Length: 367
Length: 104
Length: 166
Image 1 (spheres, rainbow over the protein chains, first blue to last red):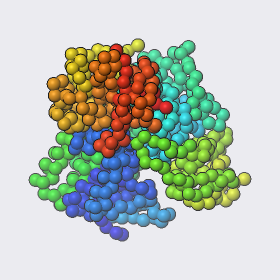
Image 2: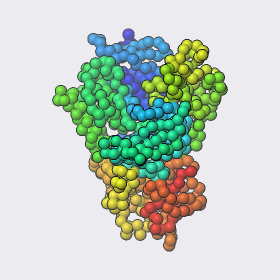
Image 3: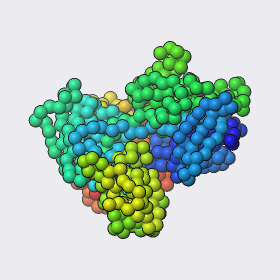
Image 4: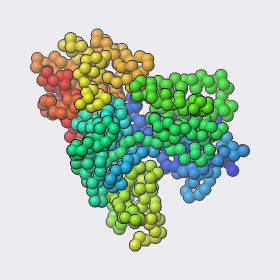
């Protein structure tokens, strides 16, 4: 079996950043992804990113994706596409990673593995929720911005986190009308500036509202929304039926953790990070020696933090491979930690900061 | 419907291939996910469930939920959101679990 | 109903009054100036670097609200397209005896035509007044974000913040 120094699973923002760092340190690295194209969810992000210059703020997501791909290519890393990984097995000679390529089973043996598999959108159950025309907000975003196809003309958005707000805006940029954004909580979850964009475009934001049912024969034709009280109980008499051909669900994401479970990583449960997350330490290494995590699998955040975590894991892997002496690796990692911490401050970031601290403490057995 | 006019993004590619959905020819762009070509043609129902025959369409768009599976060139349960369209592909609305070969 | 950006997506009058990016009434009289309606502490600072005159300060931590220096701001408008939150506007209150210019970012298709009369809306997307499109600016630096300048009756200069999209 072919042996490699390191292998990164998932070519999204975290995986690309990790790959670049390992290669920069002089390490041999294979980046593997199930999709035909690398970039993960970066290429559907057509808005300008937040953060500071070091986080590539003010640059649109797809341009960041293009930059990362160019850096990956020039770094000399090997990229395997169309290759879903179905097994990660720690082994006495290394970590065996099994994958499928063009219907052929293949495997590699790596000294270090970084899992950067990302996350998946949550769904919501209500009568009619399986009707065609009801889809994840991220799915709609891929359709309009990557495939350039409008899934519908009259959209109801469910969920006011940044995904719901940003995708509403982008649906309007693509020519759809977003008739209403509804949110079960009494306040808006995402950034006010994103909410402000869709308000200026005329989309009402209805907090303390939920979707009661979707109506339609073969596809969604209308939705019934209803106001809820502070215990999320529907208030009779507040129902409203809105004709719509598309409902987008933006109620958070969950880490895609199958491979981490499979290889025996210890987990903890932190709802703020999306649910079950593999425990990791300051080097992003899990409870299984040699297996690291980065990005949404290590707790759902955003692309900017995913890139930083990828860098961190990449530097840590390079150090573990003996490519960096500690006196070089420590300041490099500190720089990344500082940038991560700045993204995790303020009224929106502080809770994620605290949740990540809880995750790090779990690694020390302090949970 | 295709998003031809956009304030930020570059012009779109023109359809360059034909695929057949339940026997009907629809234009597609080579390499785009089958699901995208279907939505562009206004097709939203991709399959019917096994027990009650309920309609289903695309949901997650990243190959995880399997709600968008159809029978493609005689092979059932193909995830149309991650399978690229190719010239002359035969796509069929899948009934239940589907079957190999022609749909009945 | 609860007021403010957290509940409605629209900063309340009180939030705007205490916002360090929103200039004083007296500064508005003196000439064109940036109005930064950024009222939530989010990790973001491109506006600070966008200003060639050093009139915008975010500082550390980067979640601090941008502070505008009224004296240094020349009203050049370069910051408008640099704000990822599209929360920066430019107001030239005394453009003429009776009208003001309001510049805002616009990222929809199609862009309005210069010289045309358009429906101007407020922060809630509701119609306020007709206005004349004075200028439509789009350049490489703004990376797809168009900056539209509309001429509106003076009394609406702190209310008009966009136009209907087609």
